[in-house]
Length: 412
Image (cartoon, rainbow, N blue to C red):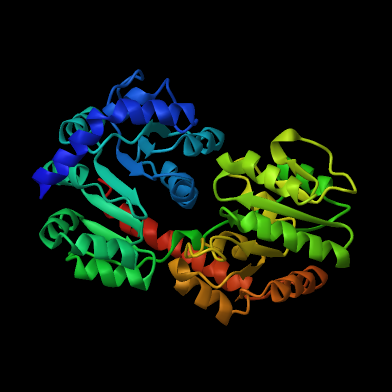
């Protein structure tokens, strides 16, 4: 099966110039660094103790606390972080990490990944979430470099895909040295995929620190001081229209209301703004630095990595991907920052987390817009924090320490 997989990879490389040009025009590739995906580097070579791969923004945000802790470890001289998206690079550049450097993840071609491994010579490779790369895993294994899948996540859908090629799946997953699943569903699938070493460490997204004292957070707080605020986060196509109409209903009952929309994909920002303007809503973007006026309806966040600052402004958030049949987005970040979570009914991607939050009386899901409207207004009026937030914080601290404990076992 590796033979057929490599045929597909090589075909993708043959047509990659067309794909790359298209992605550059869409702003999804950096033309100055495109060579990194083929293991061509302009930067000086240096060996790295640890290599961590986090595909994009969500995976990177979850691993930042781990990286900060690892940077304090004297055994670790260098950390190589790879990601696959330009948006994740923008966040990395803001982090000001001391021991960590960034490269783009290479294409999973056998020759290219061999060059990557021989160039950087990692002593340990850590992959975040659902990043499974057959050729990379095989070559790391052949060079006796331990492979850890941290915060591992395998859905029923992806498991069923692997089951179409059971022997190939067993070969790929058999290369994994240690798997740290983020939920029970993933634990079950990893066992069925014959991963030999699985340890329960929990979901890294439970961890987070409430930082509302930095300069930018204070500026935002001052900007919204005369308004009532709620967030609609990780919204998908068509959900912004629903949020816009909901805002109209809410504003009839709460005159000084601002709805903050944080779309899942900020490249849709212009499209979202146009759609909201057609609803006769006054929408301003975060990047415009415009002053909020009395007639402002929607504040559209068109930058990555700042969600927590907006969650700190309110105590209630709608989490998207849940009214359309996407399966929901992770509600943990707003929840641990004290937000009551409202969502639509389609949350199958994060069943365990929503069940946990429901049991703590920190979330509700419904397809009834009137219920959503009443929930938001009720929470805006009641600012008493839910005491169960402390449970999330404790779980988060425990999860971080467990993950670090297992990583440390592989540090020479």
